[in-house]
Structure formats: C-alpha cells, structure tokens
Length: 167
Image (cartoon, rainbow, N blue to C red; front, side, top):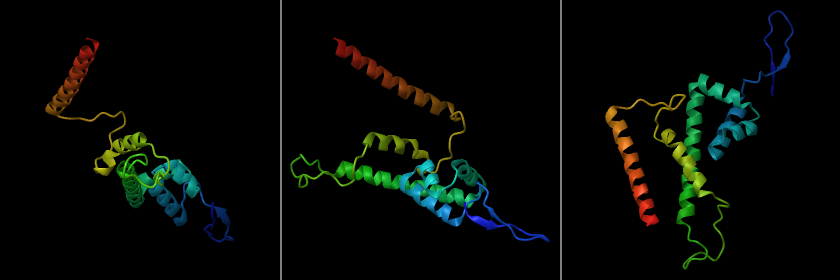
C-alpha cells in the first residue's frame, strides 16, 4: 500500500501505511478499467492491488463508486455482446465465401458461456433492482399463474414429443 502522512497534534508527523480498506485514485481507476474490460471483480481487485471485500464495502458506502462500478459492468457486457455478435456474424472458414481460411482473430470464444453470462446479468442491463437474498420476488397472482401455465405447457409439449419418439 501507499504510504501516507499521519495527522499530528503536538507531535511529529508519521509515515504509515494506508489501511486495507482505503483506496488511492490510481487503484480505483485501475479497478474500474479492468472491471470494464473483464467483468471480473476478483481479477480487477488483483489488478488494482486491493482486497475484494473492500471493493464491495466501497460500493455499498460510496454512491459515486457504485455508479462507476455499474458503468464498468455495462461496458464489459457491451463488449461481450459485441464479441458474441462478431462470432455469430463471422463466416466459417470452411464455408463458401469464408475468409482466406484463417480463423477469426477474436481467439477462443465459448458462446454458451457468453450467453449464460448475458442472461445472468440481464437485470443489470435493464436497470432492474437486484433480487433480494434468497431469490424471492413478489409478483401478482396473474403473473404467477401465467408463468406456471407457460412452464406446464412446455412440459406437456416435451412429454408428448417423448411419447411420440418412443412409438
């Protein structure tokens, strides 16, 4: 950690280490930049040289930092969406009209993982409030019945398809 000069009241100034929960402006910028690039909080904390618990505490206690964190996450997911769309739009090298045979330059890309991540963070992108701990969300009776009927219809279709396949 960076050294700081301690306060002095009728005594000599002292150099001391910053407490673990204190962040410098450089650490905050490094954290937010890496978070925007990767959407990985632990990786961003390692990059900035801060403890992940202090990052979450800082987000809870500093609204400006929380807003910057959210902006970094949104930037990261926009990049992920762009990469996913680029992978889907890129012609396969073995298909007619494909590139000169070289693979896309984006590197290894797991589309299923990307879709799972995007699905998990859809609420962040749509600016919804996070689900309370335990995952319980209160909805109206009509919404609950509609969701249940939709799932039951899907189950009935799947069972009918399985019965048909067994014949």
